[in-house]
Image (cartoon, rainbow, N blue to C red; front, side, top):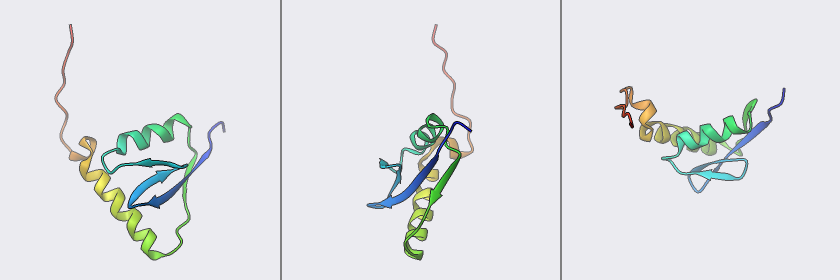
Length: 80
């Protein structure tokens, strides 16, 4: 295995991965970051149940704001 584990936290109601904070609209960027480091596993060690709930809400919000999660195919464009 060449990848590494990444660590998730909730900071100011945003997703933090290995010290990098991702806005709710940055689901794709968070996924790209984890792919770039060839993450084996995302580890989340909550301090309490409130932090678990906060991460859950952040993930839902990120999914709602992501064009990939809309279920619709994005329009394609071709450049000549």
